[in-house]
Length: 208
Image (tube, rainbow, N blue to C red):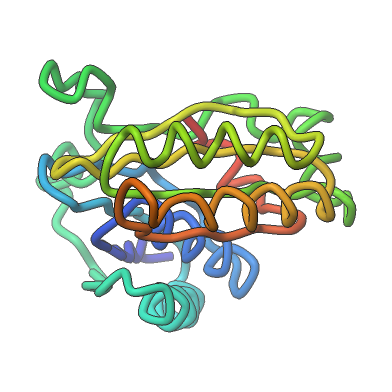
């Protein structure tokens, strides 16, 4: 079987992660890694058979467009072996962003706990992405005061884009994200606010 690799790049972290969830629920594809650009760029890379990757990328592009992520997509049906280290390279630390900018799926992403989260209809992830730290900090404070949710972590891109990810049951995460979203306009720009019910194991494996 010839390896096919698909790329979906967006402006913003949230549209790319939502797209990845949709891609993995649409077709039988495997996430290779995600990578952060220094300025408003986030790319997810998936592999699989050509038909599966094509279907996945089409579905991912549609949802990313709806979320304002301005997606750029490409499918390499038969990539040269010599470019593999560039496409699927090692982890890389960016001192300016103070975080890794190349993320590999966590090896134990198929642990019993994560499989349970991915199949539990009551479990959800919430994303609040803003341009401006103060805006997102205020938003996530309001989110946590509004519902029983847990903060997983944050992801930074260039240009002041920052995302905070929360988890909990679907109702709580929806209430929290709505409360946080309502606060953002007071202090900054809202890039995206979204809830993923029953997230795929691929998304769980790449969380900050």
